[in-house]
Length: 106
Image 1: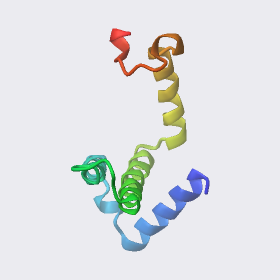
Image 2: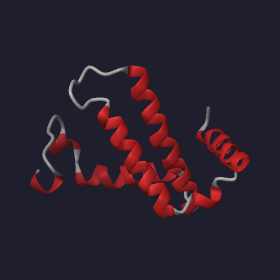
Image 3: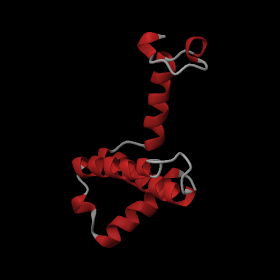
Image 4: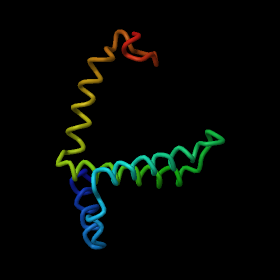
């Protein structure tokens, strides 16, 4: 499903429940952080995790990220590609391949 269809489905879900009134950028950012913590909790004590729970928590993170992007008036795909271009410059292949070193120490 293209991301525009996903966004339309999320918008419809929110509208049906009249939840947009609660979706300030601050609240959405908080929700992303909370859901990301729940995703991390899936791996808290063991790297072997419940795949279905991981997927459900990841869906929550992505849902709030879509809502925040929408609230800010930006296209999620566009901002990811833009950031990837910036990151590509910070981590040139010839210096970064196979390394986890931060860009300022390559």
